Image (cartoon, rainbow, N blue to C red; front, side):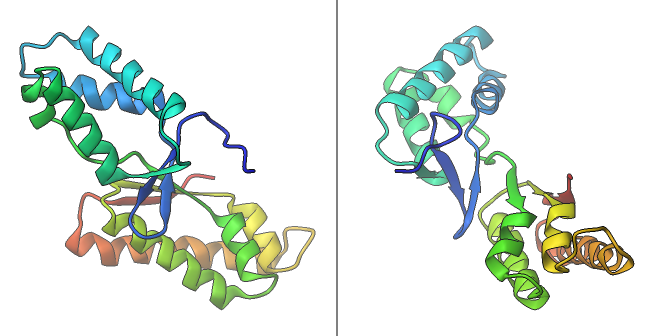
Length: 187
């Protein structure tokens, strides 16, 4: 059995990217949907708590597709007579977090080409799935694993620069078709 770091399922974005489903993201999404309607913002918080309750107590899976999540929210809102809010929902999924150290582990020590292939797949999957923000984490651990180094060396700094350049160039390429997508190395 796998223990999730949170009670709510992950949100699948694209073919292979996951995002954390967090209460503050749900509340913000629903609060934004009430703007321009006659529904007060405090009601969005109540609806958000209801969605959280469903996801933690009744949803059977550990992952839910972003399309399915938004469909369920829209259907619930419509059933409650809040069609104006349902029509106003921005279906942008939460930020996708990519663990660079996990990709390096999957690629194997010293297998930089495999790592860059995995990273490219993850970045493209997140962007094609509708994510507007992709955050890469664990750069230092990733670099040490790929370079099979205990200390941060000149080779490590070079590899770190290559990874940053790869993320930037991927953003640039994807940004031609999807300018709203932001990719960055957060840590």
